[in-house]
Length: 303
Image 1 (cartoon, rainbow, N blue to C red):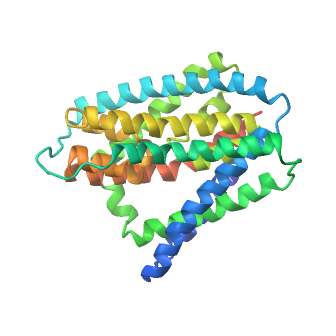
Image 2 (image 1 turned 90 degrees about the vertical axis):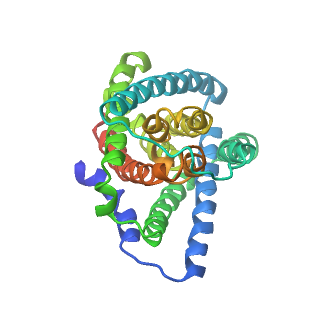
């Protein structure tokens, strides 16, 4: 079972093993990653749209998503606050950087939701059953992980340097451990096996991964729950990072989860200063690596 869980990381490690130097190829990889993310989310939406009793399922999903988002928010923030008290971290508020366009960032965060909604409507009203959609989404996810590995390597990141960042490791472990505790607490509330709630809690904001991996194992309804839980983490992070990062930088960075190394990084950089960037990259990198392992492991244990 553990071997099956680790197999999902093979494309990521293979990509990380390849060093790209050509700017044109790096740019092509970047655009392909973006395209694959939206293809995966569109296929996820189509799967949701073709569920039986769709609208009843969506009502149940709303309460499940709300429970996950609230529990993870409270437990993550509490653990990150404790880490900050134990290992205080300072940011650099005097490091002046033009603030990013927050309206543009929030619109960008809404695009994944729009892709899933479009797929849902197309799948429900226009398309007949698409039996190959799940298999296509799985292959697209494998290719996406390989390309993300290429991106990480081309950005000059090394495992040794990232794993030696004490604050980054502490922030990542605080998020991971508190998410597992939240998952256990949610078991009676969601009424599902503990392995399933822990898998749902292991996305750490990586919605394009969690939606497909969970959906493939547990069905499109739970895939939608996983996607919405992680997409909302990103949106909430965009809202709270500028508010708390100067007083509690570890808390702000940590709640962004896996997105701290990419999507929420510009907000972390502009609001907290340059000193926050290595911590954000290290914590996001670690959470991105352990997320597929934990999800695969817990889903392989679901009875």
